[in-house]
Length: 122
Image (cartoon, rainbow, N blue to C red; front, top):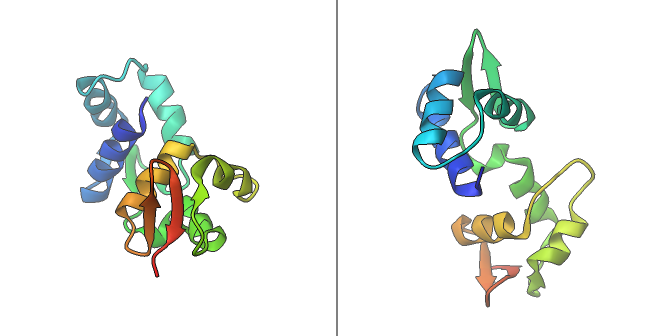
């Protein structure tokens, strides 16, 4: 399961509640080799996803994303390699350097410097 596929699944869940079968089929349609049980386990592990009566919903907005919150707390004006930021994440926050770079590309207060360094915009 790639970060891009997970992002697409989140977008689907933000627009309206989705069943596990719908999300599984959407993941397979874009190239995920995961089984339906594996997708269910992934959804259970995502902190911004809630399940109620068989429907999954993702919270909207970056303010609900614990990774974005943590990144904003630890990054300053000096560019820091994304791999170093992964090591500085609070306990329980699991993320890859590539995912941090994607957040920096899309966040209004962050910028990506070079191929993999992140800093706050000045």
